[in-house]
Length: 270
Length: 310
Image (cartoon, rainbow over the protein chains, first blue to last red):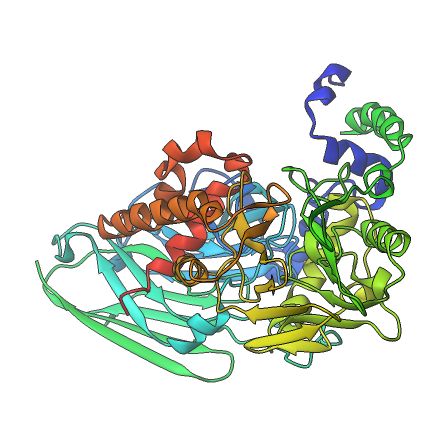
C-alpha cells in the first residue's frame, strides 16, 4: 500500500469523485470493459501478447476530446519475410470501442499510423498488431479526456459538410525518395458525424455519417487499407509510410456509411 | 488502488461537509448600467467544488419584462439567479436568453421553465444541445458533482436565425445570431437604451479565449463587432463590464497570433502534435487558464486551417 500523503496531490475533483460516485470511481483506469467481453468480441480466444512490436503514443490528458492525436509506431521495418499485416485500434470506453483497423503490406515500408480520434471518457486506448505469422501483439495507453466545455464532436460541422469528399496528399518535400519509407499524409474532409445525440431535444438531428473505408494505393499496389468508425475525428487525417521504387500515382478511395464514395489521385516523382 | 480509495474517501467526505451550493446561495449581482445586473464568474476550470458556476450571467429588466442572459453553470445557480431576480423586481421574467451551448451558460435553464417564459437562442443552439447532451450528462456527476437529465437541456422555443428584437417595455434588446466563431451557436445582445453589448463567450478577458467553433470565423466576427455602437461590454468571462471596443484587443491579438503561427506550422509541414507543443507559448503570461486551453485551441485551429486554402 502506498503512503497516504501521495493522495494530497490528487486534484480536488478526483477526491470528490471518489466520495460521491463510487459506481464510477474507477473512471476507466481498470480494464473491465476489455477483460469482460470486448477482447472476446473482437479477437475471440486468440492469444494477445503485450510486447514491443508496436508502441502507442497518446497524450495522457486529451486537450480536446474531439481531436486527440494518436500515433502508433512499429518497432521494425516491413519486409516480405516479416511484417505487420494489421493494426486494430480499440478505445475501451467509447460508445463504439472499435475505432479503426489498418491493413499494411510490405510496400508500406513501415507499419506506422498517426491519426486523430475522439475520446468520450477516461479510457485505455490499445493498438493490437497482427504480424504476418498470425500472432497478435498489443500496446496500450491511458487517456484522460479533458473537462470543461468540450465535447467529442466536430467544431464546425457545416464547414466540413460543405467540402465533403475533398482529399489532399501531403508528401514531405513534395517528392519521392526511392527505395525507402516515405512519410505521407492523407487529409479527407468529412464531418464524420457520430449520430450520438438526444433526439428529444431538437428536431434538427444529425444522423451518423462517417467514413468507414479508406484505401490508399501507389502505382496500383495497396499501401494502406483502413476500416474506420465514429471515433475518427471530423476531417479524418492519416499519416503513414510507403516505399516507392519508381515514380507513380497515389490514389485514395474512401467510402462512408451512407454509401458515398470519393477518390483522389496525385502523381509523384523523385 | 484499494488503499488510495480508502485514504481519499475521508478527505472527500470532509470536503462534502461544506455546503456544495455555497456559491449559488450567495450569488452576487452588480448593476453595471440602469437595469442591467451581472454576476461575475471566477476564472476556474469547472469542477465539483465550483460546480461549473464560472461564467458571467445576469439579467436586463424592462418595465414589463425581465430577460435573463445565461442561466448559470448548475441547476442550483439557475435557482439562485431566479430568486435574486424575484427579490429585486416585481417585473416578471419573460425571456431566458442563452448566448451559446456551453454548460456554464445553460445548466440553470430548468429553474426558469414555466408558462410565460420563452427560451431564446441561436437557431443552431437546439441542435448543439442535442449533440452534446449525452456526453455532458454522462460527465456531470464526476466533473461537476451533480446529476443532469434531459430536462435540463431546455432548447430555444424562440430561435434566432439572423436578428431579433425583444421588447421588454421601455427598452428593446437587439439579438444577433453570429456565424461560427467561439461556437457554431453564438448569440449577442445589445441593449440600445444603455449602450450595453452583452457578448457571452464571444469575448473573453483574463480567461484565455477558447476556440470551440472557428478561429477564422471568430476573427471575422470580431472585426464586424468593432462597428457595433455601444458604451460598454459584458464579457462571458472576465470583469462584469469593460470599455467598448477596447475590451476586444487582448482576445483579438491572441487569436491573430494563433492564426499566424498555425499557418506557418502547416506550411512548414509540422504535425498537429508538434504545433500543440510548440506554438504561442509567449502568450502564456497574458492569460489565466492558459495551460488548460491553449493546446486545444491550437488543435481546433490547426484542423480548421489545414483546409482554409480549399
